[in-house]
Length: 103
Image (cartoon, rainbow, N blue to C red; front, side, top):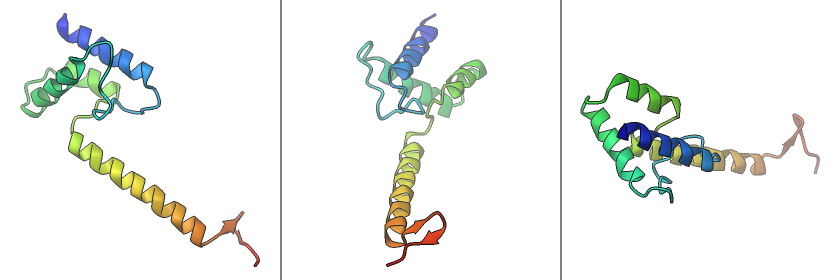
């Protein structure tokens, strides 16, 4: 089945890039098969139109497939900004083990 072959390629790509917690659409450029990027976009389109079989949705959900690229990018940006803000707060308010540093 053609769908399962592409799905398997997606899983292989994910295993090769395990530092990514999700099958990131921004990084889907596998060297094994350049058509996988187009395949993932086709999956998103079918999903948005309500044309995707439930078992396919479930299979993709189980591997952390990103359905909405823009939302994913927005969350990634917010997460990065929050991390930066937290680091800045820690630098401007040094605390060690709950006690402020003495000057």
